[in-house]
Length: 215
Ligand SMILES: [Cu+2]
Ligand SMILES: [Zn+2]
Image (cartoon, rainbow, N blue to C red):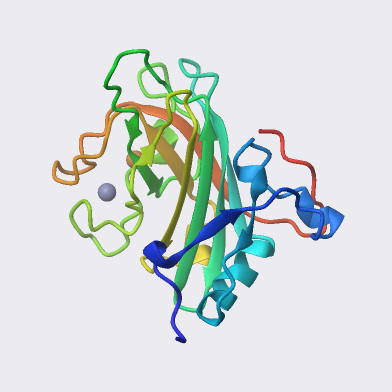
C-alpha cells in the first residue's frame, strides 16, 4: 500500500526502553509514564513508512501551557510531514478532571490562525484568533479542526491523528488551543467549545539545538 496510513491504521505498541534511538532523538521522546514507552511501531510492510516517521524528529512542535486559571496543564504537540498530509501526535497532562462518576473530560482541540498565546483577563489567549480556516469553510470543516482530546481520570490525554487539511509549513507560527468544553461539531464558528484553557505556539523543530523537554 503506498498511501499514508489513516489514523485507524496507526498501531502503536509499548516498548520498554527507547535505548535504540540516538541520544539526541531520545530528548524528543515524550517523558510521560505511558508515552515514554511508545516507541515500537507494528512493523508489517504496509506500516513501514509511518513507523520510520514516528521514530524520527517531527518537523514542527508546540509546547502547550495552561492559562493562569489552569496552571497545571502542560504538554507537547508534534507534527510529522508525510507525503500526503500530516501526522499529529499530542500529549497533555494536568487537564481538568473530576471525581464524579461520569466525568466528560473531553476538550475541544484546534489549530488557531493567530500567532500568539497572549490575551487579556477575559480571554487569556485572545491572540490566538479563530480557527485556522484559509478556505473560509464552516466549522468543523476548518483546516484547523481536530478531534477533541479525551482526558483520563487523572487529567492525561494522548492523541494521534492523520490530516491532510494542512501542511506543516502552513501552520508554523500559528497556535494550538485546548478548550474547556467538548467540541459539538455543529455550532458556528467554533463548536461551542468554551474557554481557551491552554495554548502553544507551533515552531519548526530546531535540529541543531535540541534541548530536553520540560513537560
Ligand atoms: Cu479552538
Ligand atoms: Zn473550527
